[in-house]
Length: 296
Length: 184
Image 1 (spheres, rainbow over the protein chains, first blue to last red):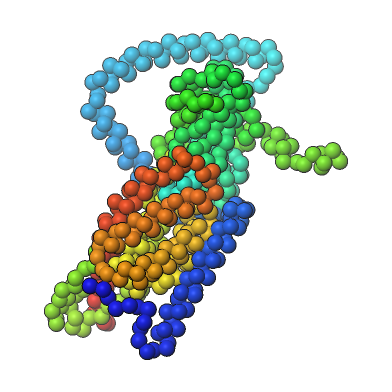
Image 2 (tube, rainbow over the protein chains, first blue to last red):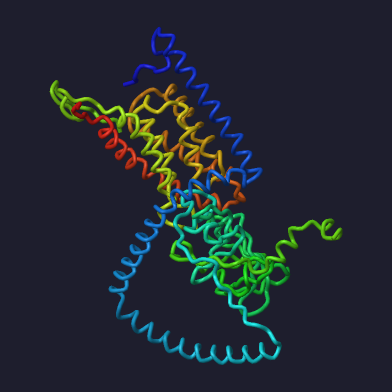
């Protein structure tokens, strides 16, 4: 049954004006929203202040939910492991043997590396992470891929720093609050990362597609040399990420490159480490206008 | 999903009618509080590589608006959207605009189709959720491409299928909202 219309509340002027004012306020609200949206699309950093304060306030709850989430995943994994124990055991034994051989080979390579580095007088630059923290949340319902980290400027995090999980690159710090910071994940459609193929020097750009895959675009055009299963690592170009950190595995070939799956899926990552910017000089150099450089 | 509140002169679903009153704080606070909380929830679930969790805040807002027309003012999209924008990961202003528009659209639809029924509510919610997800993606500052729009489909499907459950939960909250308490 159709209810009586709320638009005609009777003869009360007050009620009629109240309804009218409601519509006017709603219209003004929508207009204001449109203006704010335009402003934040034009200058994405416009509203960082209130947002970081808000995320700072919620971060402790995120820490709790992250702990619960990780232990939940652990429980599911152990139940699954129990059902597949036999076949998995055999498979693991085979892999273990192979891994031992590879390990011996790697030791040999490391030795040789050390000798050669000594020969050239290079120092081993071991990067100490700025901070190790949990991913406390993410923009799981938005088309943009952001994650929130439970550490901020109070622990030395600065915008631009690369973030690494135990398996590989996760993303980059975008904005920093006091006790939390926002990361741009690799799969966001605004994220571009210079990479190279692990075994040789095929350089490319890894762009996020927004659907969980990365698009590998080769810089040198020509015959596509990629194969399914190729691993891409950071190349160090741009100066943010240090070279040689795993990024993605090629899963499908395209005309100008490939589609790749990220190695360090943020959903499976618990703790991440924030590294210092690899070459800060290169970044300030790139940001300085040429005229200013010449005048000095 | 409008509940038929049965009752006698002495008692109804919300408790005894004698010497008991609705709590003003609950009656006003529960709808807004539930929307504020559900706007926050998607952030805490999982750090997925694709958008997956439905826009729970908007679904709760639509739910309250459709189940209990009249308790959410038309302009509620502005303050609630502002809160959601702080956490959702969309650019600031996106939810303010789209939630306000959603409230106005529901108002217009209700004038055009004034009948009551859950199927109609569900259709309204489906229309609003699909338009919202599409426009929010286009206005999110992401590079709009076919794969990006395809990635929304699972989220949309999940949102539409979850709406009846959200409605049920809101109906439960509505009972709590109108619970009667003894005056001290």
